[in-house]
Amino acid sequence: MTQRKSPTAILHEGPRALSSDQVREIEESDLAGVLHVDIDDVIEYVHKDLKSLPGFTTLYRRYLKQRWDVYDLDFTQDKADWDEKMTEDERQSFIAVASGFHHGERQVEIELPVFMIGASEEEKLHIAAQIEDEARHTVFFDRFYREVVGLQGDDIMDILDASFPWVSETFVGPFGLLAYQADEVRRNPYDERARVRYGTNYFLWIEGVLALSVMKVTLSYARWRGFLPAYYTGFTATCRDESRHVQGGMRYLQQAVRKDPSMIGEIHNTLRTILSLSGVNSRQIYYEPLGWTEDEVRMLFFQQLRRKLNDVGIDLTPDLEELLRRVQPVLAGG
Amino acid sequence: MVRDALTAGPSEQARRDKLPMYWDFFDRIRSAYPASWALGCRNLPAAPGEGPAYLFVQWAGGVVTSCQVVGPDEPLDATYVLGMDYPDWKALHDGYDAQRTVMYRKIMLEDGDLLEFFKGIYFFVECLAVIAAVPARYPAPVQGLRAR
View 1 (cartoon, rainbow over the protein chains, first blue to last red):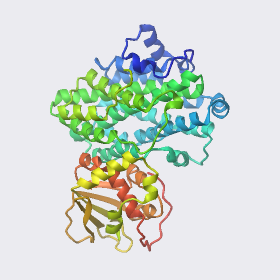
View 2: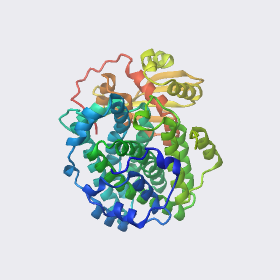
View 3: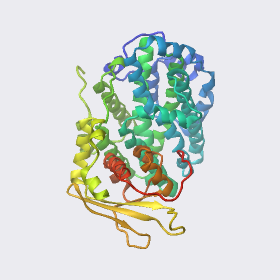
View 4: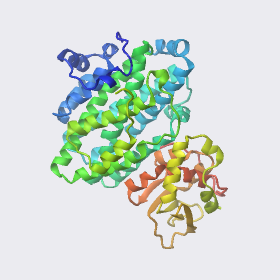
């Protein structure tokens, strides 16, 4: 957290190459060292390997090296920042954004096990590691909401209940769909078409687009203001975990399409449903106290989507391009 | 009563709590919604061992054109067949929110095109909340519920 650059600086600069030192810092930092890793570098790192996706065993070995202990984080300074330094507008904007993640981590944890059944043996290792990652991320948010925000409850669901009022009604779009897709896969775990539809929503949209975008918004705010060091550390480490998940998910989708080119139709149909819902908001979220505008956040979503589709080699149909054009805002000055 | 409630749509309070763009989307979906729902109630205490009973709702031209209860032994033909256990229906009527009723897989799609169904998910969730607000009797007691 040594730099104080604007939260949206990289959004306007566009893609860039990471130096070998930056890559080494991201891959090899222990939890204490993650505090000094730039979140923009980690987001860029997600894309570094998308054109030559690492194998599942490589991802599993990275997991073993990068696993961190969520109980090593000390939220004492975060609590002081939250209570004494952040303004009420900053707190409200932050919690409005973070609550989606609080619930999202829980959802991606519990909906993933069924996907393992139909996976290859190597991919099963990677998915098992991912489930453990997602459980740890759920605990991370549980601790943050208890120890920093001050929510109270006897168990994890009590805290989820307490933060739910901040979750937008449109959350049910991607996450309700994921729940129902998980049930579809549960009923037919070897149905490759159902698995590709599930993977498109889970790995491409929820993890590759929504998660990385929301991470960037709250983490770039924390870096910019020099606040919430344990949140920055834990959530940046979470982002490093997500890089493995996104790379594994993109590898799965890429292999599925190479094996059966007609699978591209399942990806397109899933994106058609997701994009038809994604231009709608039920609540006004004020991103300005965090250094962002709503248009910049939505631009970030679609920048993330474009990069993954391009890197993995998934073309869109003309109607999807048109749908994307309709829901994608034009970034002022960009 | 359910038909009237669905035709009337969400309350003024519910509409005030969300952005106009959300309701524009809701109204656009409703005006062209060509499908029917069969909302099943499983494990009815009054009929142990029998199949679920359904609330059948047919939409056309932005209004409900048919709304009736279909018993376990009656023929059922709906675009989307969904099912939920009796205790979860009671929880929904007692105030549990409709969004998590979907997200936590209390109500599940048992038959129908999932991706097409989700294009209208905001419309469905709001209608589920409307149905839950219609007075109903649940004569059998239910133990406390948690997410699963």
